[in-house]
Length: 417
Figure 1: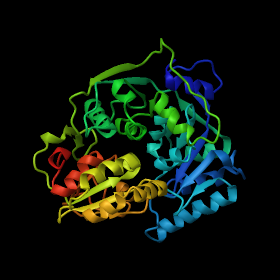
Figure 2 (figure 1 turned 180 degrees about the vertical axis):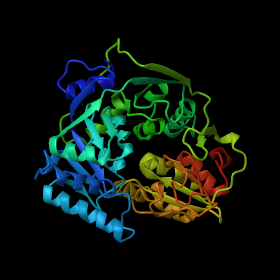
Figure 3 (figure 1 turned 135 degrees about the horizontal axis):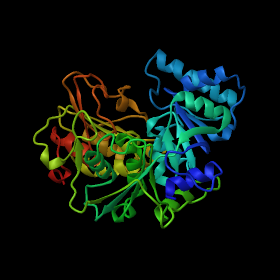
């Protein structure tokens, strides 16, 4: 068996599982947020169960419309908050929270060998620590909160091997945008994407979170990495419970093996209106922008902010550009303050937000008007994703987003540094 199959087999008490097989899987953690939890809670009430199966294995995070932007979002969060306190489950509110997919790894709530489900498609982020993590609908989450189990089909597994050494301004965001550009937004439909190779071995944890996060943008059921010393170093600082590391068998079978040589790769940019519309930054020509967003569950971690600050230090944001920086969690915000990054952003003319999903989903903190263009480190650039259906979103890494904020057009960081 491969890595994903090993984890799933262990969680359904089987010696082996095969792609296409339907299984009942025991979960280690169940997640929802201020958009998806209210639906799950209402469905949970319909089941007639009084208590969740295990409050220590359920976490709810207010992150999409917080601090609440209007009465509707306030009511959503209140419903979730009341349920969390009633049930005694883990709950992160304003002041302690962060963007859920940055927060849970930071808190040591997701660990190697886990099966994690969330009522959010980017739950696949946690595959970076060697877990099987996937998004599900709110009604599935309601049933899981009652029973602790999920019913699912074992996905086929596609192995991606990345050869070569990453260039200075190339990271996890570029690897995953390039991959999606090659295989398409449905190229890994309902498959687990296993990421390996020399470039992956040398990729820091933050870059791995970025890649796993966007597995769903290729249609993936999950994105997963092998546990190596980088993973163990990250997890040992945070884990508060035991975990088990799984390794694929030497003769593990895969639905497909895809190999890339990334030694000459330059930063990638996905043009509207699909993540798969990826091109090297040097091939774009002159595309003027109105807004640059640096943050989100994809690229709101401390290393992302350090890269952006390296570009912006001593420079000024273009007078026609709004640059919005959103740290992924309160701790990341605090770390950025201690390192002087926040001062760099403000001196450059950027605005720094409290942790929130904000503009990524067209929530708030940076909605686009008709005809406006944004470069963003977020994960999706569908029509109307960040506001008006007549706006455009270009996806890129933090270095490109920061460089573009300075020039007023989509630019390579090589133009600045």
